[in-house]
Structure formats: structure tokens, C-alpha cells
Amino acid sequence: RRVPTGQLDREAAALAPGPAEEAEQRARLRRLLTDVGALPEVRHVGWASSLPFGTSELGRWAFEIIGDPQVETRDRPMAEYTTADPGYFSTLDLPIVRGRGFNDRDTLHSLPVCLVNEAFVRRHFQGGRNPIGARLSLTAPFNGPTQIREIVGVARQTSGAPDAPEELVQVYVPLAQF
Image 1 (cartoon, rainbow, N blue to C red):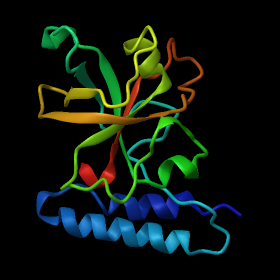
Image 2 (image 1 turned 135 degrees about the vertical axis):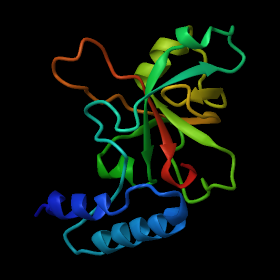
Image 3 (image 1 turned 90 degrees about the horizontal axis):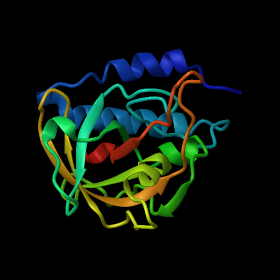
């Protein structure tokens, strides 16, 4: 039996960002995920800012791999930026193929981390370079804030839209660190 996503969408919409309510919003989302996960017919529960089969709701972020030759900001590669909780990958049966997934130790007070997908690795870590432990400088759209994050894992590639000309390059960030 499937849980009606419309009900979850309405609950998630109530979590729209607002600086004064961030802690309360995170607590409400944790309660929602716990409540849904407690239903007997639910095997896994997870949350992400975007569905895995298309572009990110948070946009494409420019990035550079720290230690690689520097590139002008306007020439930096882009990646779809998605926030996700630790349950997201198991819920979608999206395995972590290298390194580790997110866990409860990934918090606002811990090392900022991220996962990348296989297309990211193929495109930006050629020659067998190991992405685990590499650090990324990520810049939000429209010259927004910059984040430095360490890659801790690689997620299996998902399919983008059927008419997409190339594979999506994705960066996943723990919800708890966003």
C-alpha cells in the first residue's frame, strides 16, 4: 500500500524556510518522518529537497575541487544541489557505491560533508582519482553563499528526464547541515 504523497506534500509545504523557525521546522520534519515510518506498511522513510529524476529545487551550484587548478567563477562546473536526510537513499533503493551515506553524526556542529553521484565522479575525478576525502567549494546560484564540504560518499547514478541530453551531476548535502 502506498502512502498518499499529496498528504506528505502538504505537510512538507508547511515547512517552508524562515530563519526564525529553522529549529522548529527541523523538529516538525523529524516528527513527520518518525510518524510516517511508524506506520506498519512503511518499510523506509526519507526526505530530500528534490526528486532524484530531474533538476534540483535548490538549483545548480557552481563548484570547484579544492586543490585542482583554479577556474574563473563564471567557468566553474555546475551540479544539481539536493539536501537529503539519512533515510533518503535506502527509501529509494539508491545505494552508496563508495564511502558512506549520511548518518546522525552529520549535524550543524560536525564537519560539513556531501555525497556526489557517479556522473560527478566520472566527469571530475578521471584517471581513477578517489573522490572520498576531496573537498568542494560550492557556490549558491546568483553568487550566493559559498560552502566548503568534504566528499564522504558516492551515490549510484539515477536517470534524469528521458529526454535529458546528459547525465545529471549531483551533490547531496545532509538536511541537518543545510
